[in-house]
Length: 326
Image (cartoon, rainbow, N blue to C red):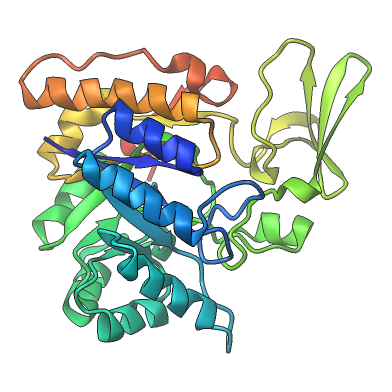
């Protein structure tokens, strides 16, 4: 059975994910070391200890995401996060920065290391380098690859692969977002924020909901219509005579129909995005995907179409998995 790796932005979401059938939980500390550094999310050290204990008691693993890039000369916070993750009993750390991966391999050799999607490792050469140089055991593949490309990569590596199957998409190369940095002054890769809450504002205007980011209007949603997540890349803009989504449509990834193909491609683990989502959302998505991976493992048909109302704007896409352009 493929491993189901599920998000937890809070201790309550961790418990909900475990109870719904997650094989592994990924979460982060409440600081700049993880790429979902939003107010009210993430874990203190005592909360992480309790969460790991809760998961382990029920047969689930906990993977600690330390997947932002340390600022030059300020590595102490990131080094402490790796050390604390090991001391608290984490089953693995998810790392992106090359220097931090080297540090973990040298100072914490027994701590399992996964390569974050933030590292954008999309070919066998770079994956094999991380495996041979730093003992990386798993790579989270970027969301820019087709299923055939994933299969080709798996034939040339001796490392586990993990892929996203549900949740938000990023139009940039896995967090390298100049758009968000420009408008908010916060780097997703270094500060762990995309569309920080302090920069988001809403206002009802002429029967529409106007969403603003950093003072710029990025979307107007008619009354009663589902509103997209307030990121600049999913904003609706006027370009010449055309008004529409210039960078990316407000849709979520749903690759549930591709689970058999991903299994044949040699994928080890399936990842659900959504650490900023509610525990009710997490529980429902995890429960549905647990049923799907169990059905696949038992040779039954995978249930489809059960998560449509949980997608962004109630619209879904298979993303790059089925891309046909070249």
